[in-house]
Image (cartoon, rainbow, N blue to C red; front, side, top):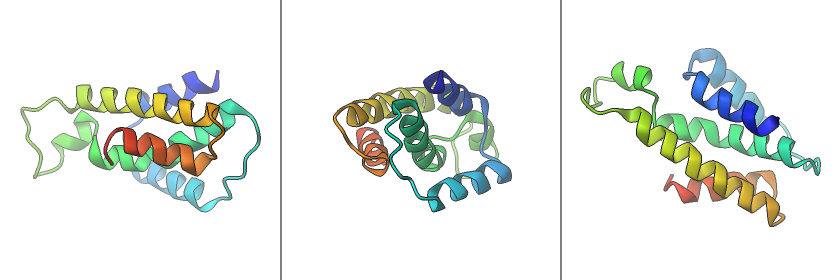
Length: 112
């Protein structure tokens, strides 16, 4: 259920001031290992979320940035990046990586 919730959060939320503050709080907290795959996966994806948002903006955020190409659909790139990163995070966690290591593996898989 945690995996589905994290995907819903990524696809259903654009970056706002509140989500940015929430992401900073997640990064500042101790990311201790709970041993629960879903919990660790969610923590790793939250760590990675801000980086994904800056590199792969949703269409709303991309449209409000003067330096972005308005004719480009960023949604497909964002969806592909989230799919790739979440698979890499899950694989890293299954191999015994910690939350931060799994987040870095996800980032590396999409080149950020």
